[in-house]
Image (tube, rainbow, N blue to C red; front, side, top):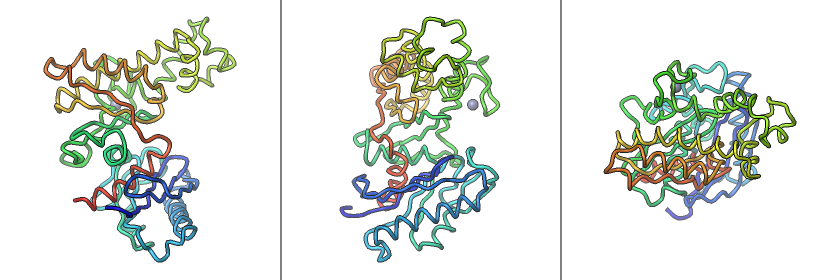
Length: 324
Ligand SMILES: [Zn+2]
């Protein structure tokens, strides 16, 4: 598969990122356009077309050459066979948009669309930390907690394509209410907003943490990056938040490992920026809580693809289909 290229597209709530990626995962060119998600699907689709056109024209790809297809990763439920995106949570007014056929008609390339967590999993499998594992679970720690299950080098999708929603594994029957309607989901502990909200509540009684200085005594300014910064400065409370986040996560990972007998987990996304202390705590807690035969095998690793993981992962959708 040498010298093949794909266009990888990552549709986010704020930006659409696009890039030309080689089959070895190298980014050749990249660009970005506003999603304009609040203006509804028609505007988002025309922004998407604009971004792809720009990439093609700027790079003299009108002759097509070695571009083998367009891969698109998007949040929400994606019918990847039909190329239909349903109700992405971060885009207003979407019901069912046949993005695949729209883009195929416009540009004449093969188009492959998938849920962004599945795209991230494929990205790690092809180009990142998952290269040498037969099976692993990708965990994306952002506003939501997403998951992609790779079993025997294939995505496990479940009966209706909705598998991998590990963010909604429950770790406490009476836990905090989750956006999905349930209680005590792991997302309600380690998802960006939930984490920030919980710590904002706790901060009222924590007068001696360095976090206060970093946010200028404005609680609204609290975010995971500030917590990480304080932890790096040696702040005990900030460090404890990161360890606790890892432990919550590890508890969910143990249940998932027990069910699937998959013992490798790759953590990516914003909150994974807590780095080594988070990974270690998750590893320790998962190994402690998993069934005995699994304990020694549990591995929690950081994702290798960083800032451009979205477009690299989406390009992997194209290479993955070509491998089949
Ligand atoms: Zn939930």
